[in-house]
Each structure stands twice: as structure tokens, then as C-alpha cells.
Amino acid sequence: MSIFCVGQSAYDITIPLKEPLVENRKYRITGRHECGGGPAFNAACLCAMWGAPVQLISRIGEDPYGESLKSILRASGAKTDFLIRDPGMETPYSLIIAGKENGSRTLFNFPGIRGEVNYPVPPEQPKVILTDGHEERISLELMHAFPDAVSVIDAGTFRDCTYAVAKETDYLVCSEDFARQYTGKQADLSDWKLCEEIFGEVEQINRKRAVVTLGARGLLYREEDGTLCHLPAYQVRAVDSTGAGDIFHGAFAYGLYRGYSLKENLRLGSAAAALSVQKLGSQTSIPSRAETENYGSAD
Image 1 (tube, rainbow, N blue to C red):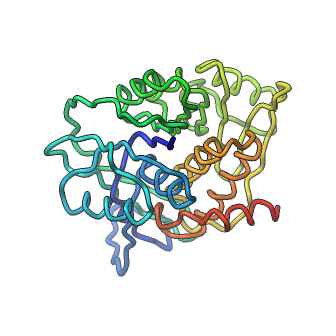
Image 2 (cartoon, helix red, strand yellow):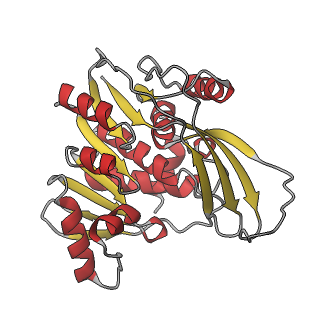
């Protein structure tokens, strides 16, 4: 059995800048960084690099960007047997401005025009299904076809499609943006009652397990005894935060595959994300499993 990573792939072109973007100004660019990207793509690469069998279920076009992404997948060890065939679709790509001073990123995504496709359920039984919500119908069909698989969603932004999938997952792992957009409330760690309210509303979506990530402020999760807990983030100097969430979720899916406890899994994902933001790019910033495990155990 393997991990199915379902959702978006993209080709990333990152431009590092030493200063914030200013309107009506010309910038002379002397360098850029190109690599694979997209939530499902990055997660699949991480799981494969860490030694887990993984299938990427995503739309990748038959064009130069698509061929580059397939080469990256093959090099990582991820399988592409069940890619979504969408003839004529242009491979999604992103232009990213990375702020070198604080690791911020401004992303312009060109998602490509997706067509209606008939996607047959793969014959292979997955152990874990990780979805980013971009392929709502296919994600739900896979979860229904393989009810014994553990399902987790990377919920970055609140959309109707993401919400529909999140309601049926075993683990809802969402960003603070998703939580704020859903509840209308901004998490503030100095106001624990407010955090309890936000988390309580989020976990009612799937009525199982939930996690709310807070970027550099760590994350919120609930212990087995029902206690809401805060796990601080590793403190690092960020160079580029692109893909950090994807890498966190990929590590989380890997931990589910290996049977780690929730807390072990959250520490693993946090360490992987912390290591990733110290490098430029998304897929190219994926740390090794050994590096991540050593980093986490050193805390």
C-alpha cells in the first residue's frame, strides 16, 4: 500500500529580492530559481524521497514545464501511474517573489484551464490519502472507494471545494488563513479562550482530528484527553517560505503512513518546514528524512 497525493502540481519560477516590492518601479533581475511546486507535488516528492511508496494524482500538461515536473518526480522516486489525463491542459506554473530579508513570498499562480475528465478509480489500495482540495470530485471518489485509508487535507485557503473535501477527512490540517476565513476570527495566542473558540469551530467541520498551523507561531492541536495545546515553531532565519506548508503536510502524511503518534507527527512536520524555509524554492528545499529527524530530536 502507498500514499496517494491528490491535487495541484506547478512549475515554480522564484525571483529573490532584497527589498519589498514597490509599485511603479522597475527591478533588474540577475538571477532566478526554477523547481517543482504545488501542494500535492511537493508532498509526493517528500514522501518518495523519505522512502515511502507514493503515487501523485495530479494534472500535468504535455509541455516543457510538464516534462520538467515528470523528470523531477522520477528523480525523487514518486510514481506517476495514476496522473489525471486532461488533454490540452497547460501545466500550471507560478511566478514567486521571495523576500530575502524575512523569507516572505508573493506568489502569482497560473492554474491552467482544467477540463471535465473521466477519472477511473486506481486499482492500487492506498494506506494514506493526502489531498489539497483542488481536485474535489476525484478526492471524494478516492476517499469513498478506499474507506480504510487514512485521509488528510492540506487546507490552505477556504474554498467551497476544500470545505467539501475537509468534511470527510480523518485529519483536517489547516492554515490560520483557512481558520480565519471560516470562523471570521483571528487566532491570538495571548487570548486562549479565543483560540479554544476558533479550534472548536474548525474541528466541527470533520468531527474527527484537526490541526491549525500558525506559521512562525507554531500550531494548535488537541491531545487525546481533550486538552487544546500549542506546539511552538522552530525558530530559524527564513530565506524563502514557499512550499513550507506543502512540506509540512508531506511529512505529516509520511508520519501517518509510518504510524507515528499525532504529537510525533506534528514535530516531524514542524522540523521539515523549519528546515525548508532556510533554502530557496519549494521542492528543492525538501530536507532529507535523516536531517529532519536529527533536527527534531535536537530540540
